[in-house]
Amino acid sequence: MEWFTASDYWLTRLVFQRSLAALYLVAFLAAALQFRALIGERGMLPVPRFVERVPARRSPSLFHLHYSDRFFALCAWSGCAVSAALLAGLDSLLPLWGGMLLWLVPWALYLSIVNVGQTWYSFGWESLLLEVGFLAVLLGNDEVGPPVVVLFLLRWILFRVEFGAGLIKLRGDECWRKLTCLDHHHETQPMPGPLSWFFHHLPKPLHRVEVAANHVTQLVVPFLLFTPQPVATAAAALMIVTQLWLVLSGNFAWLNWITIVLALSAVAFPADPPDVPDAPLWYVVVVLAVSALLLGLSYRPVRNMLSRRQVMNRSFDPLHLVNTYGAFGSVSRVRYEVVVEGTADEPARRDSDWREYEFKGKPGDPRRWPRQFAPYHLRLDWLMWFAALSPAYAGPWFGALVERLLENDRDTLRLLRRSPFPPDEPPRYVRARLFRYRYTTWRELRETGACWERTYVREFLPPTRLTRTSRRP
Image (cartoon, rainbow, N blue to C red; front, side, top):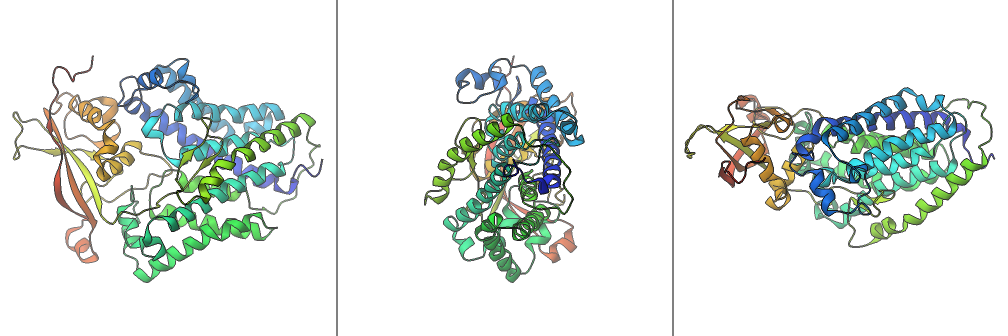
């Protein structure tokens, strides 16, 4: 069945699968290390409370059958182990059906996590990993050539990621049409990286060129993915370069990296294909049937993409098989940060000894330079950025965060870079204040050594202490 496979893409498949396995490993590692404080039994948004009110048909997950922190940890670390095995190439040592089942395991485990992750797992790259991961199940292993239809569907996902993001920019903030969004983006993005300060201070004419190049890459180049080689490879390479530019300029979890992995699926690597037998009939039937289902499900994302009321990062089915993507339809002009502080004084006063909690990734101390964390995802830090935009974003979980800081909760403190209080001496009060942050100028950086300058705006949360009713059992 020569029409069914593209044997010349065997190395493409190998690079794609190993890269995707690495991203799976990062995702499961982040889940294993952060879940207790976020969604654990004593977390800010506990899974048991969620599964009580949301039926399994709306959020299919193993955790509807059973939940305990120990069971979640087993699932997360099992996901790490399977991802590492796939990264090492174990699927190539198994029969075709065994390799497919092995790829199905991390997809099912991560689907179970995302579907109970609530606010902490509401980002587009979660659904993107699941959509791409499901297609990886159909790619096969060394026993067959890569199916043409699956390679096409991978390009179709990449097209929707890029073209959808381009459309939502043009329809959203006018600064994208005026080519001025990058005057603000690097300063106001959710989690700046170590080079973001320098990107912000690039000449404004260069920012205009960057935005224009972004429009070309997202609105024109995606159509070239469906042209013959080597044009498709050139288009994918241009997307990879653009994504690497974004990697250098910020911390966007694995969003940029999985887009790069998708682009790799369109690259034709020069290599002599190995001799493989024809694909078995059962495999052909399964691949074609599932591919037809996925193309049918694409109707809703396409309709959304073409709508004037286009929404971004939306899943259209509980299995996250087909989704819509997009980011930064609007860009903030001013950066606000919530600064959380505690004091051991009793009573708490304005002039008390307030000590600041330091987060790992989000801006805090103006002299502390941002670090690179992506593709690893610091979920609490990202949600703190949304909290600064509006207290409504923090409503479901911020009070629980403060309560756990007042208790010196070990799992919560592990999400932070540093707590100003000893483990056996929790603060008596915790408060939160809103500050405006801006990048310093070159002169200010030389004079003060600080990359940020911050100005107090208002109180975000007044001094709060534990009461008898707020203490957890």
